[in-house]
Length: 130
Image 1 (cartoon, one colour):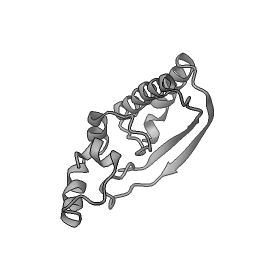
Image 2 (cartoon, one colour):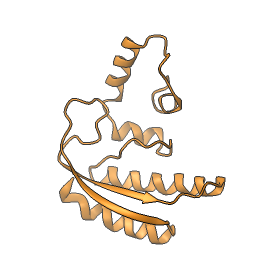
Image 3 (cartoon, helix red, strand yellow):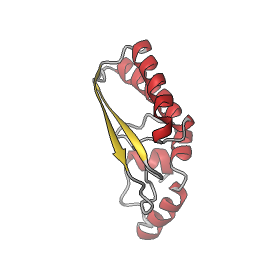
């Protein structure tokens, strides 16, 4: 939420220095609420903090990136925000559940339209159990 932006950016700056992130850019975007999408990341007026980070491809770098991603997600959740569903499955299932409280509704719709689970992927398996 806009009023909580400072409460996110200060920890982000500390984390970027502590973890020595190769942070290439940060973009701030206003995001309007999405009352229709079941997995909406903007349930109210929000400011998206978009990070462009060079992530090492080696396993140690990927593990470190998962750890700092979880820290940032936790920070966003703590100030009343959420996070955009990433390509990587680094946020924990518990963080997903807190950030996307309508996931159960989404899963019910998915099961209705895809009862055999043909349209699935690693993300759906990790976070929805399908």
